[in-house]
Image (tube, rainbow, N blue to C red; front, side):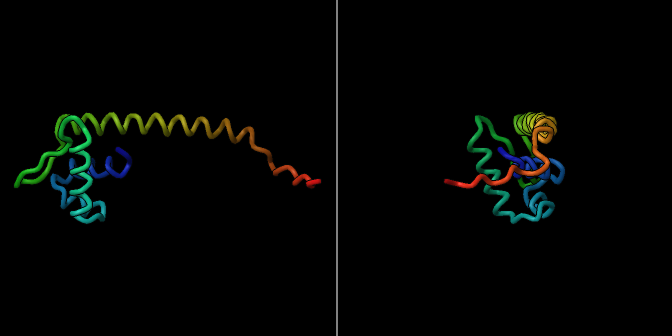
Length: 101
């Protein structure tokens, strides 16, 4: 699971089909279908179900997406705070190169 697959799941949830999600994300239907297939094979429960009417996230898929987005938010928040701490430790200019013997 990563940001691309999460975006695809969001698009499937909002568009109601894999092909419409692909158009929204400017991805081919085949690529979207392959990513959905990988997701469904990797997790213990299906993430997306399909029918002649379209596609939708399963309850498990909605929960997985929500948990991933929460984890992503925590990581972004942590990175933002850590970046400020590191910036405080950065020299205004690098030290000069030491001549080698």
